Image (cartoon, rainbow, N blue to C red):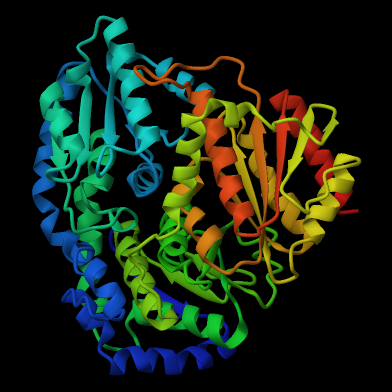
Length: 545
């Protein structure tokens, strides 16, 4: 895989022709070389301040090298103590990159990017004697990650284990979390480059530390990125990042194709499938471009034969990560490290073409504020929570104007029909993504039966990803929230709420913000998760008949 060719092929001849002027514009403006030299003026005066402190990712293949020895030394020490199980507490860019790195390398990593009590309890049920938890947060203020740290610290202490020796931290220099970590005496604090935003942090300590401790070959990852760095910095129409960004920009401007449907497939050289890569790319692209009423909505699908990819309409561009198959209009090949850097470059270049700042996330905080408000006012969290309809194990709630009366299938049919033909349906599952993993089948079922592009996200993880696009991107989405009863809740030490309450507040808070933006929100609460999910799948199938 290390020697795999990196390249972008615009398979669709019409798209290739339309993309050519966009590529030539990027080359004429020397955007690639200026990006590589960290020119903060590329996205206009309003973006310059933010961009000036967000461009160090372009040289991480060099600057992250010293981390390799530190990671290996810590891994060796931990293994000598019998500690070989790695749990990662992180959200968004702090979890998606390590997950794809370890999955592609075939090494185990337990990722906690959830507030579901069942999923966290399962992680706690692992062998704590063999466990180290990596807590990754730029500031330490991320509520999910802070909750995980508190819960695991107490679990270690209750088991007679020195918690400080089992907690490894990745954070920014001088952050409140760095200060807390020093005060608590945590085992090791890795300081990441502060001039890199979370979604561009795959090759910083945030991506490399948990993956390396789990056993992934992170030195090879940096080698792979280094192998394409010069090519990506070249002002040439053959630059893969220029080609990719130009294709995205042309499809968006010329065809109204505001969605990228991404499937991972084996590459032409026989390299391994980059497992989970579409989820990583989803955050990078959605959060970087989805603002000011424009942007590119990534739709991560199961494969090239999946609904939404194989039958993509004019509002979407199918992109194969690996060998071009079926309906793919663009094929992107290369090793994982090379693709990390390629897609980051392409996304930044696409920001230039779209006329937006690819490094801010102005709408992400809204859902967090709404959730905090609900946590601070428990009566609001409980009040007004009577369902409009109960159908078996499914309770139905809806924002203003959403049909919530009748059979579940009829409610769903009306809801799906409310999405514009070139809009999208977002399924947001605030459930356990391991025990309730079958919920993900809803994406394909809905896409197949409605003919509309359909995304699927686990809450609250997607709030750090597509959550930005939902509020700031093209305003043509409808939002299906799925929440579930909590059988065994978990207290968050020294906090006035449980994980279950936090999860509920996050769902309601995001729904509230979406409704304030005038977006239709239908929430289905499963009073029995297994039974409710089965009923929901049947209702989706019936709604599409």
